[in-house]
Length: 113
Length: 117
Image 1 (cartoon, one colour):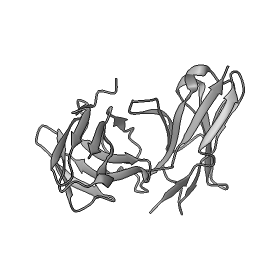
Image 2 (tube, one colour):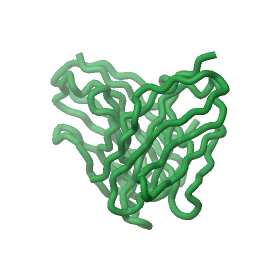
Image 3 (cartoon, rainbow over the protein chains, first blue to last red):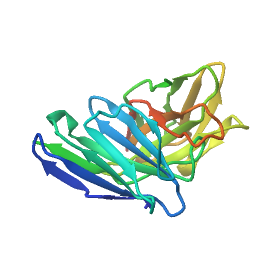
Image 4 (cartoon, rainbow over the protein chains, first blue to last red):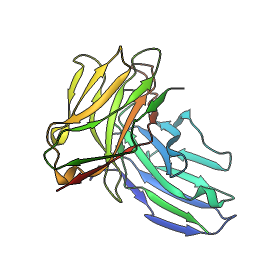
């Protein structure tokens, strides 16, 4: 158990819908990262938050957005869903950045039908 | 952007044999380097990482990796494979700004390790 929790574990929805994925980091960690894992693209960095502020953006679509709340939990919002958005979405947390170990949650498997 | 190449998407070894998983990165300066393991239906778990100092890094479960700057490589090895090592292994590099709060990881495509009895 990494100490990072993600809900829900599985999500099945239809094209055009909107979903919210939730992540609670390890106690004491200020950074939260979101990654997408798919067969086509592999593991891709989406976005990082540090202590409530956006720190870095990767290949995140405009239809996707995220935020980190004052209690440091984070939510990833995916809207106007397409079939290609079906993937495993991981949240990770670390104390800071750089060399700090990132601890990964178990992931949310999103299926868009 | 940095990139990571893992040679061989599938590696098969017999139990007790040497495990060698290859990773090369592209970067103008030595980045931070990581190996993660992913078991089926689970998240990623850190095996080991290189930041500074000794180039031979020891990790969990008997794995180790050597940072070779001249070859831009960070290959993962284990002297004797065990059935429980069967999993997918990912090499990753992080951003170059040491001491920064920036921490995104760039992952390779992964290597699936199969261990035969």
